[in-house]
Image 1 (cartoon, rainbow, N blue to C red):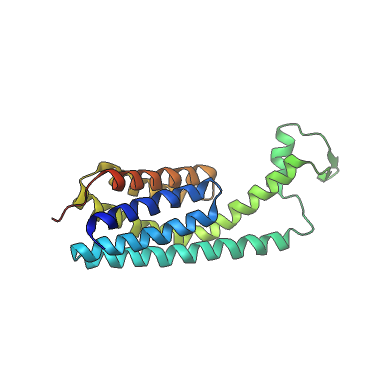
Image 2 (cartoon, rainbow, N blue to C red):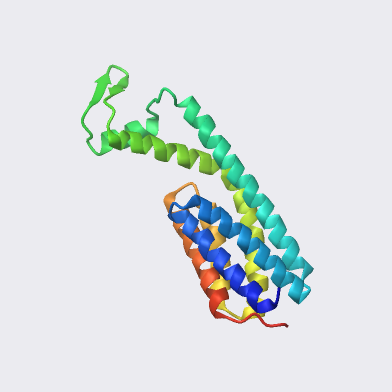
Length: 202
């Protein structure tokens, strides 16, 4: 594959990976695979072994993080089945004045299930699973930044470099929603930069 085609392939993969954060998980996974293949082709064309090795390491760590997230989510779901209200749900529900909160001598003694409290529980599961998965994800983000930095030397596009930085910040903040938003922006910036900027031999 020539360098131009590899660049377009990598850019499309990055865009699809970003789309995955909008709820289209399968497209996101496919996008990451395409991105990996594209980066490897770019590295082969440029004879950049460091870029290729960083891409492979990033992908392996990302797969590990994804696997830990899925396993943790289902294990935590089983622990919460039948569902129980955690202290976080109790505090939030009481703070905003949700009806159906019952108090006893020792504090909160019961709840009435509502769609809102069920949503809070679901978000708790995602956040807890995200915490477990954050370690390999943060490690993978270091390699993504190295990929972005190497790509910046070939394209001169600041969007690639900034996208790499946002990827690190987003990975650190993954347990909360803002982290996922930053990862989405990072992928889109990297993808758009690759689709609109030529990759040149040094």
